[in-house]
Image (cartoon, rainbow, N blue to C red):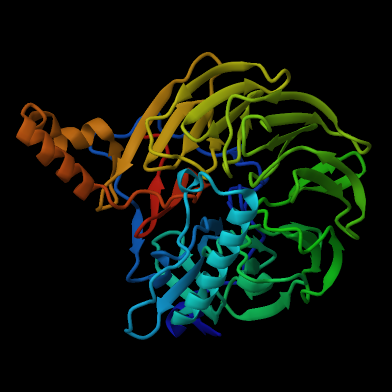
Length: 487
């Protein structure tokens, strides 16, 4: 393990103050619901020449940024924190030919469930054996939020997982909490990057990847890793465990509900259940068959929203109660493997693959739905602020949080220089419209377009929104854009 920081920079670090209300210090923001309730006005459209990033830190400064998992950035006390999981090839000999490559659904036709299960087991055996040809490391990076300067790096040796470990850091009381590969929970000093404690959570580990983000209630740090675990913030000791640690991976994160009797923790669990527990001892308050998947549950006042991975499971709303919650409605117009919805002005905005919809919170009746002109959007969650909804996939979509109709305000692309601008502005700048007037020019335009846009938002990540600025993890770096309305 190592913690690296220039002495001159460490000398400038001040004692961390309490978190600002504007900080995006954990997964889904300050209230864990993807919403900014106060802050500056945001622009309604991008300037004609686009927006250059206030800063852009590329993969040379942050080696783990490329192919380092899908963790989203968080912002706390004028620092940006990013967690990555990286594998490095060992040796120069060619890797052995695959006997059991991944089979997409269309190539499983004719296989029985038993035959496919055996094939998958063989595939995972082969993947695990091949993992010996790589070294695995996890890194936590701390950047200055004002200029993107790297302040420190904490790096430690990790283990193989099928996919990169991608949990989002949580910053509370000067500590960063993160769940790493191999079920290793860690706490790191937010100012210096020094290790504070680490705890290996119980449960079998083979090639799991766990993407749950810590929730902190009082002095208990709560995270999902098969079971729901409560850890002591002071030393990482396990205070309680709710559920079966070997139940399988679910990448949803727990959320708080402010009930009439204090804070209650709500979490999706493997097997399509959602539970509520007491944060101090983990005792079960209730459990419901929500059919929820990887999407993080959403609490809005006295309503609970869960989201399934199929239209049959749907988007569901419950009336919260310390007894059993009452199911109010199910909307089956969208489904997604991991995208989490947001609520604004009494409406639920939900994205499911290419479909985007606005649903009334009280009734579940759809106001509108539309198809996004995007290639396989999924896993990225929506944000809400200043009467607008933001979606950072491929580029940045900003639309009005209106129940009347889908009203896009800005549809931006990000070029290889990090410039964020409307697609039409790039078409004019690159001369695409003129090129497309001939068949030969169309081929040239297509090549030019692909060459220009290789650095958009990293798939599966969700931006952080703090004080009118958006912090985005791109394919080749991290960028900060000022989205405040121009005077």
